Length: 110
Image 1: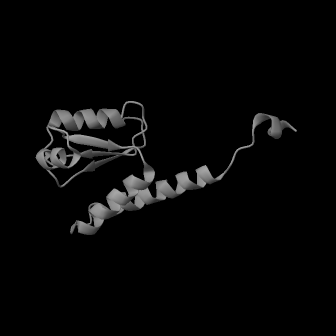
Image 2 (image 1 turned 90 degrees about the vertical axis):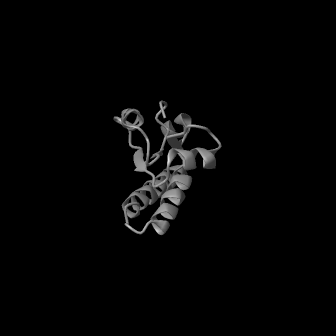
């Protein structure tokens, strides 16, 4: 998260205020999304295989979009639908950027 490559930061439902403040601090001046999860620290830790885990980050646009879409499907409140849509938009934009090949400096100046 410190390198700024996180696309989403997942925060457990029972994360402490200190953990929430740390996550928000990591995201200051970055374009990553903070995603409050419906899962507890114990559930998140179990699924990630890391004890005492209250937050996690994902650095891949596609995986982030897929994760948020899955959350939106199982969530009855619609809380994650807007986040999923925004991440899909960002993933598509990143894919378009990757599809455009830049000319090398020599080709550019010829």
